[in-house]
Length: 465
Image (cartoon, rainbow, N blue to C red; front, top):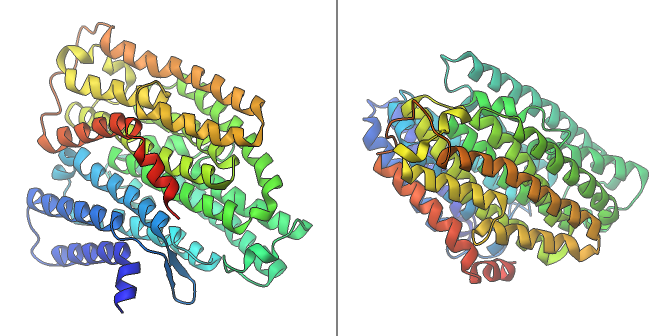
């Protein structure tokens, strides 16, 4: 029993928080300010618990498995969820359905934890659905806005379509191999035509969830229609979780099909970087801009995945950690401005430095990191991704990725120039005075700088198993 609670400590903590929120909801309730403070404290506790004393083991006849690396991945997702609760404090305090919001978000987080720890394809599918359906409800949390309902519908339809593809792929895998266990599949997977077809279906389902081109068409519309807190969760936490389980699927389950999935990763990585960058240039809405930016970032994650081996795993996990700080800092600034000034267009950010220097510097630091400019952590993250991808000796692929980094500089620096150099006759007034959001933005800024400069963090990730 002690072993059970130790191996499932992250899942147990999240489940307890969900039940506490249900009790609050069915009781007389409490004020949003008090409830939010309690939830933030519990989320911080969940982050600490997820990061300490992780060990390797399995439960339920191998359906659930964990290790020090999986525990660290859960810690990254918990940290991101905690930062979102701080960054969107102003919006959350005004929300009349605060318990429901966190119940849905934590249910999705619980599904992601179980998905990362899945030991067979059935467990993976059930946890994937648990991590997806609550997010579709969250996308429609601004019930009075039609665009929010449209976002939820597109999220449900795209998720149902990708789930259907995934289920068909799982059925083919079981029919061809006679097992769905991650421990048994590696010895039975070969390059036969039926198994190859099954893998293509599974790969396509992952591509949908990660918003890989050409399976990205739902992303920008869902991001724009959802509340920024939900958009942040989708962009960072959801993508991070699917990147982690994708690593497991490629390296530990379908490693024998390496030649196949390597070429698929190369093609889709290039397409994601190019399409994401080109469409990001054209965007005027900050959420759509960050949506296409995240698609381009996924392209770089695929570069690291293509390397294979320990370097590929450590580079992707390290980059996701950096991505949490960088992208949440950008979304945090957008959340503050949207919540207090009601502005979401990039043109509204002109002259922001005149009235909001703190937000301007945080946004600039976040965009510098997303662009991969030294000495921010984003530079080191992309450097390790490119180094992992170059391990196969495919240098033209790395050259294309490097060229896309240069292209991304244009649209990131365009916003920074608008914030610091362009004049605005009607600039935004001072916003972002809330102490919680400012603290979270400061944490993100420290993370953007220190995660890159402290080399022991990458070395620590390399040592996890």
